[in-house]
Length: 554
Image (cartoon, rainbow, N blue to C red; front, side, top):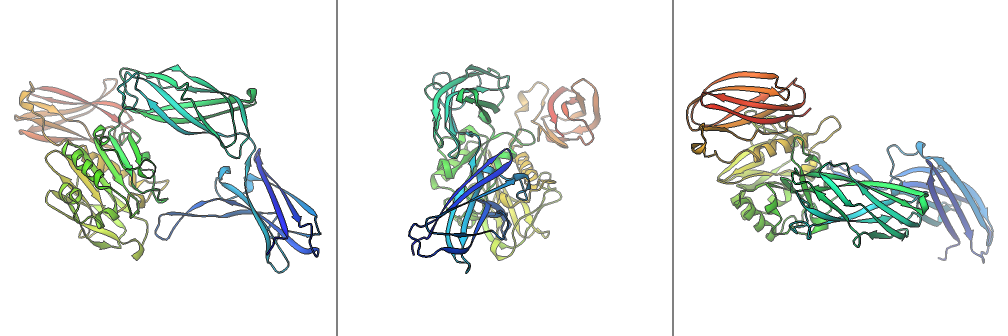
């Protein structure tokens, strides 16, 4: 059936108000006038997340408001006529949560008196001002570094950025783009470039004139924050955006194997350099399989796959992970589908000492009260019933149960594996299903406990060659929030006194710990009620004293 009407829709958001213009035009050869028509106009979100019955995130297209109301606008139209409509609304009164203007669209449709739809149209809202965003960046250290495409201490590197003008924006001319950073370890040598123009929807980079910067010789790995400012149209447009780049190699690599699954969460966001070390993120959906030589740059790898079922890990990646473990790395995997489909996988069975056992509908997970690392873990998993039956585990030789479903400890949810030179953790449930709320973050607690266990020293140092015959190990966690453990090692019997001093030299804690035999021992500092800051833990013995610096967070 040939359409009798044509609809043109235009909408723009400016100064907090949405303004809509709609034109409805009839065909020139309309046989009869159309009467008792109704125009309905709705503002909707292109997508909106919600919690599905499995407790994980899905999305749909919600309607926010109708113009002028739910009854619509009544009108008649004759042959070849155009009827115009205008609507406006303060955006402060629209929606039930913070809206992203880039995620909004208008839908308009005309119904006749029988409620039949004669014509419909959809329109993405136009932005009143240009919108410049970062679509990518690259680092090159070929001329001023070791050529591994990673900015590191003492190197001079080129930073190329790709910027994009929003498709619904306006054309920009005479662009001047500058970059700044307040990081004291970074010196900018070249900090600007120019573009003649940038059309709506177009992108451009500064590969012909990259930003150039030098990293200090003494540099601790951390994300470096940059701010890019754009001046265009002879000063009529000024915009800016920030981004961060990891300089140096952090301790952890997180691998997102959810393959674009919307239920995945940004696990890497928990690794912020405080209770957990910094981490890089590898997104397999975007970057493909992890390259063979990448793992060697990290101390630990965290592999997570949400509720994804396919293409979680390739055989080549599995081989590379086993080589990584052989070299002393640490591995943590959260993937219910990997274990159910990997009964005869060498990585799982032999290296991680775990096998699939059965399935459970339980959603409570906890540790053994006597476990130093996981004893305080109590988490609730999203989802219920048959739809979210999760695998249970069996620990193989060199494997230990560390987390359980429900309270009976007869259904295993996580297994720790220990070999001569590496440690592993396998979780049968997805990290993405762990409850996270504004008031609590069980996932962060679980990740901190896991990291503390994975990073505990694998072996006792060779104290025979140490003058005093004893030494302190690395405190863990460090930095810490409440309790830190300070291991020490001795090859002789000693009497130890444990003290804590703040950065001003004030004594905070003094304990006579008594006599210790040869071997490895732990000292615990419970810093509840103590002000955040840097402290010095001192173990004084009849053979000398050793010091360890710890950082208390609040």
